[in-house]
Length: 430
RNA sequence: UCCGGAGUAGCUCAAUGGGAGAGCGGGUGGCUGUUAACCACUAGGUUGGGGGUUCAAGUCCCUCCUCCGGAGCCA
Image 1 (spheres, rainbow, N blue to C red):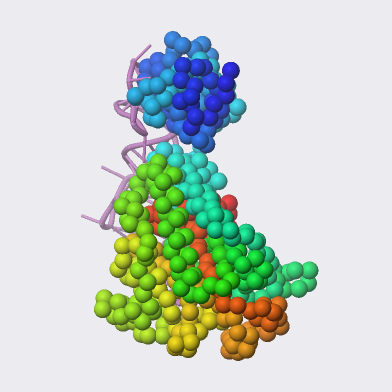
Image 2 (tube, chains in turn purple, yellow; image 1 turned 90 degrees about the horizontal axis):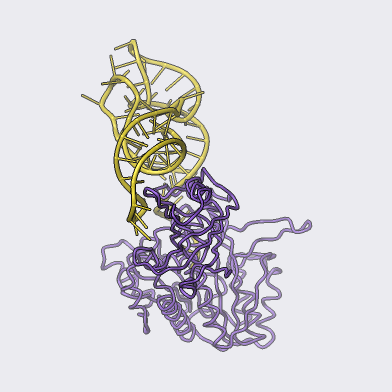
C-alpha cells in the first residue's frame, strides 16, 4: 500500500493510502468522526464512519486527543466539504502514541504562554506559514547571489575583537583568551571580496544589547554581500535588485502562506524598481516637515524610521549619513568629508531598517586614523589593515536582517515569530 | 538602566471595598457530513509572594518577584 504525504494526496485519488502524522483537531457527529490529520506538509480530513470500520477502530478514534501520533489508512476521495478538497475515508488507524493533554488548544493563547511552548507552537498553521516563508526568503537570497556568481564564504562566529566599537558583545572564554560572538561578518567578507571579487555570508549574529522591543533579537541572521570594485551607487543598485527579487519570489511561491497570515499583498506588489533614494539631509527635511524636532547630526530613532518608511509606498534608501554617527570602516564622501558613503534601506508600512551598508574606507592612512578616533585596539585590526596594504580597491557591501525583512513581508507586529527559537533578553528557553 | 502596563481555573478574560464567575479546554452523555462544529451535565481556585489599612481586600496602601513594550542601541 502506498504511503503518501498530504501535499501530494491528489495523485492518489481513488486509491487506498497510508498517511502518517498527528491529530490536529477532531469533530464528531453521531456515528461519524472527522479527524484532522497533519503530517507537516498539510492537513487532511480523515472520515471515520461506524459503518466502515471495526468497533475497536471507531472507539479508538474517540479516545484520540490533540497531537496523538498516528497512521491513518483510507481511500482518497475528492469532496467539496473537505478542507483542502480531498479527504480520507478511513479503513484503519494505527496509534503510535495516544495524547490526552496537549497544552495548545485551538482557541486563543497569549504570546508568553505560546513562547514558553515554542517547541510545540511550531506545529500550528500560522507558525508553519511564517517559517515556510522564512525558508523561501533564504532560498531566494542565496539564489540571487548564486545567479550573480557570488561565492558563499562563511564568516567565523568567534571573533577576537569588536567589528563596531559601540555595541555590546557576548564574551566567551576561548582557552584562556577572550573571544566574542560575532556581530557581523563584514570585515571577513572584505577579505573575501579581495580574494574572490564577489562574496556573501549568511549566518547568525549576536548583540548583547538589553533591547526590549518588537524590532530586536539577541541572536538574529544576516546575509552580507561584499563586492570589490564597487562604490556606493553600485551598492544601492545591488540592494535594490536584491530586495525586489526576494519580494517577487515570495509573492510567486508563497501565496497560500501569505493568505494564512491574512497579509494584504497589495503593498508588496508595489515593491518594484526603482526605489526612492534620498540623502540624509532630505530625510531630515521630511522629518521636520512632519512636525518632528529632529536635529541634523543625530541618527534616526525608531519613531523617525517609522515616519520615514510610511512616507513612501516602497522601500526607501537613505544615503550619506553624518560620518560621526556611523562605524569606523565607512568611507567618507570626498565631496563632503562630514558625510559617510553609507546607506540604509527602510521597509515600508512603518517597518523600518532592514539593510545597512555602504562603501568601505579603502585608504590605509585614513583607516588607521578612524581606528584611533574610535578608540579601537589597533593590534586587533592588523590583518584588516593588510587588505589596504596589498591591492586595496574601492569596495562596498551591506547586511540584510533576515528576521526584520521577514517580519515586514509577513506583516507581523513582532520579530519573535520570524525565527524558530527566538533569543530575547528574557528568553533563552526553549 | 529609565518610563508605562499586566499577573484571578489548564488557556483567554470578567468581577462599585461586602456572595470568585464566563467562554474555551478536560470528563460524562447526545447527535450519520463536521468546518476553531453544536447541545446538556460535570469537575476544576492559597486571586504572583510577603506585609499593612479595614468590621470586611481579587479590589486600597507599601514592598518584592515575574512577564509585556516603549526609550536608548541597532539588522
